[in-house]
Image 1 (cartoon, one colour):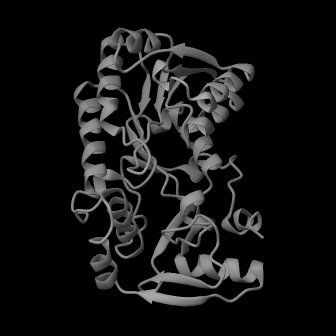
Image 2 (cartoon, one colour):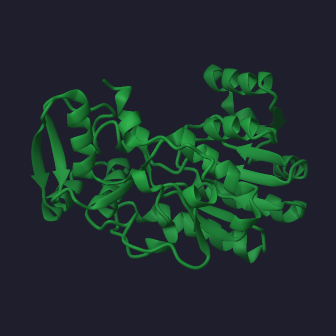
Length: 309
């Protein structure tokens, strides 16, 4: 397949480019002139080129350039940032949807989602809800344009949720104390980002996932926060002091945060108190990635945590 990655220099995008190349797809990566003097992004793009990717100049401020880029491929995968503390660019995809509609040749489009399934979050708490509303606006545009799609819910990125034992203000394991949300027994799904990228690329080109939502929910990575903490304690030989925070206290503290932090805290609440990642069965119109693609030897959290020893 010919696959175009939009947002290919981002946190997940660069992994999707690599996964597409490894799958043997003819891989195109949008090169946006807006990168300006960002030498790291340019060097990353050039590294993709050395690996066999084709760089495609295009800009969201130049509609025809987007159409021309889309016409060169079969599949479009968007990895534009959807988090407030980076560049929150979800609605920028509406221009991409319009370009795909105008091009008229795309066999599959994957919008930038990859976290919590927004269709299940219409009654989420106010903080962070705008992310879900914007993703649903993009979905509405896709479906109204009759564009073939696959939506991917990849749950918790391990880089942000696992190594830090799901703490909000660090990315590495805490040394002495760990905050536990409620009783810490709500089930969560933790995923290595390289594995997410592999599942995304496989889902993008598989007929079984056409016009469906794919949940990445491998059984060994369905863990409660307490189970994750116990894994780290066993690996490190350290016992951490556990400080429990109630839902009421957690919500009260959100008000003291800035907008970006409030959004992130809202998602933490939805995940660790409401259990939004696992409080439903995967039903009709959806698939589970590890069942569809058993050939992916996904990383368990036992193995993921070992690098932090």
